[in-house]
Image (tube, rainbow over all chains, first blue to last red; front, side, top):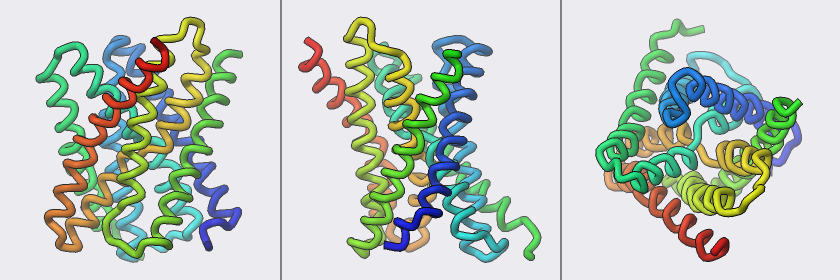
Length: 134
Length: 129
């Protein structure tokens, strides 16, 4: 029951607020810049960049490349990356493409996100391993 | 002023959503000593079900407050579900040499996730009709 400690919860909560607001503002920016119907481009960008970031931080921590305290790790990964990226909007946007009958766009977005996410994870992993050990 | 209310609605949803995910994940880790990320899997599917439901409700009810939509969908469900952990879990499973579990988790999450959204929409259509 270690995880019920206040400072762990606080770390997750702080990261989550920043993560969710970053996601909201990026999507609003993408909608304003590209068009109201292109919000999914923002979600795609967010999900892939979040994958790079979580793999980078967790690899630094797990492979002892950097010493990261549990609180900082929770704030940046479970809190920030977890709230920044989203599976629910991704699912809903895929369903919207289906409803509009845009099957090819739906398949590109739906399967493409899952593939691009895994590429993002690999990039984060390689970036972490490329950083000098301390 | 509405910008501050919007930000506050998202932030309130975000920290409750992320903490729900954190507690469910840690509880499942302690309870079931399993390599398969059951918690993240269940969280993403239930989040997809809920987003289909609340999106349809928000569209179907006139005068549904946009702040409530930001609180529930952008804030809570956006933070509750996660794509980054899903990606990292897939890599972790792959590294533990469980090819079938990896394929099931990777493809199953997105297939069942889409199914859950469709189910959520269908449930909401019964409610708002």
